Image (cartoon, rainbow, N blue to C red; front, side):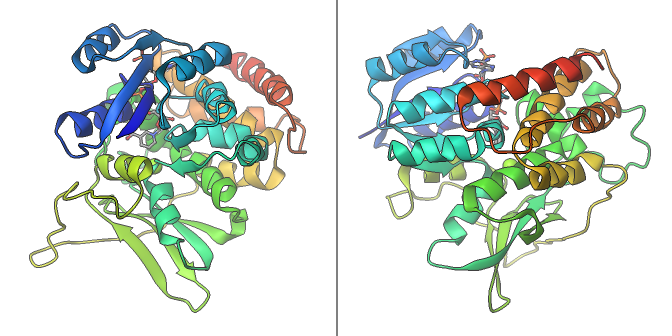
Length: 359
Ligand code: NDP
Ligand code: MG
């Protein structure tokens, strides 16, 4: 039995993981414990699975470590949304537990400090984000010269004017049903920006060797191009159950029929297109953050989160999100890679202060 602790159990990823267990797709995975921030449903879920639960803020590393000791999991799924996922990730790593990582902000902000800490504690980080899950599995036994990350393009891929976008429109994703923050990030393409940074750090690829292509169907989750020029892709219907279970159980581990087969014998259209740099500047700014390094990645991630929250709260317009990130990124941050959590927090606070002043 694999004992799974879920941080952020009440959210989209947490619910998908729990549904997989409920429906018997992985009979050898049991829930060891669950956490959330404030959703009352947490208690009901804990009663259903007869497991310990805790309302833990992602920032409270010591409390998370204690809950890990109490629940003694084999693996932890970090499905917390936003930057508060980083301290939770660090707590899991310091507890020496393998980490199925959905929280991409942890990678973007934690960078090489977080990855080195994982090495030191001999902790495996298995990506859950569908693109990175695809690349992680595609790279096994192969040497790639390029990563090609797919993007659905979000709800506004064909819309010319984004000035008057409403919250409701931005929350209506064409192919995925996800939490609010990542859904808005998908509409601005900041999500793809965060994912380019995540891929660069997780797989040690420089920005010039990572491409993005708009693939509206969200069936091909990403691709790798090998030295000889062949392109390998991982395709499956858009359903996070597969990458979540692959991260928890690995390949060749008794998983059967997790997603429905693709209809190759009838009709299946897969398209790939470029992306509009003018309407979606946040993806280009992510490449810039990656090239500049260290503090700029943290600034990009935090400024975007502050702006997205302000848009959700109705304080700013949709196009103010890239404007705010652009302005924050134009202010100075340290370029060198942070070497401690304290250094990361210092840059994070600076970015937060500058972004909040613009909202
Ligand atoms: P949701 O907003 O749906 O859920 C977030 C979860 O985190 C909830 O359980 C919430 O608890 C908890 N949470 C929020 N803030 C805190 C905090 N400060 N401290 C502790 N817990 C907190 O998010 P998603 O499930 O959509 O996304 C989770 C992560 O996975 C994100 O980083 C996202 O980018 C990534 N991801 C998501 C995908 C998806 O399909 N949804 C796909 C790929 C990656 P409460 O309910 O109590 O607020
Ligand atoms: Mg993704």
